[in-house]
Length: 499
Image (cartoon, rainbow, N blue to C red; front, side, top):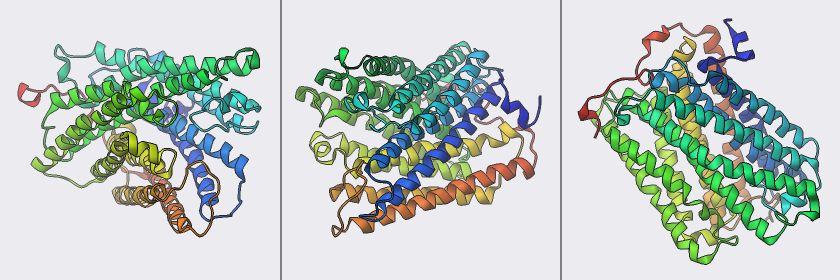
């Protein structure tokens, strides 16, 4: 079957599954983005009671859950599904039917998540901290947990498939596989290690909600600490599960548009492995102010700060490759440069929050919100756009509009900076996150209004992207898909490339 109908049925084709993941992810991105605009309307001016406290809690809880679990994660998985097999020289994924199952779990889980919003909704944040998530009387919190179990199962199945596809098609020297495959390998190992922990936590949460007071586990003081440890053991590596494939994308785009092979292939792959390992042992950073044993603060602080070293090394490798090459400033490269600059801001602010005394002062403030969004929207989303524009001709046989792509890249980078850099100022001024209103006369409203204006700019650039993709598919110039080799098919490398 050809045409759009092939994407509306169960398929074992990895490219079709990848596109299905991507389209589903961006559909939820629009839903989560609309929620964000409503939240910004509430925050734009003090005393503007647009939603009220209860509705605001439900909305930001679902916004966070949808954007992270149902927009970003499926989109990253989709790009990996579409690209990975041919990157390592395989005609298809190792388990095509498993790929299809991993996708169809996502829309089912997503529909449950959206349905939960209309039957009370989750109101304990995307982190679902206990005892709030246990004591919530609404069935929406229960549906939220079931939805997340399906989504995490999809992640684990995809990771198993990626890992098998890479290992079955690796050369004798595994260091020779492309860096995108290395990024998928490391993120897949992270997902397989961390996913069972969150699944166990969700089972315990559901059991507590169903059993009620008879099961005094997650509703106790011990349960509060158990949930935080289990959740962040998954959620902290999740940032790298999302980020590492995008680091792989940038590692493909930068050499391609610089006319220069990556200057340190082997050591960049090693740096990815180190990043993955450190992300597994630094989850306690999120618990400095919430019950973590004081003696564990320093080890977690050191581990959290140490992540910056391999990440900085990878950035220096990209800069060296750019410096030695002849750069072409086309859309994928502009998004890659935006990724590097915005991700550095997110990384440096994260380095500050890894410090115990700074973290204790800024915990639960807008500063954390700014860091988080710079890392994910400035980093992961920029990398995702770079990959989509880069592989769009190969996946569709069509060319995207370069002018619109450049406008999108510049507008996205500017929108992220204008929206989230004021949040650092708000955090230093003492503004708390997750609070639906704030007092007038403290100069917060000026900065808050600026954040809302930046959010509207980001919404506009997203519409530009959708317009570009839609009309490029309809009217874009045709290209031969077989002509696009760089960054896609496995390319053997010489010993001199494996520094």
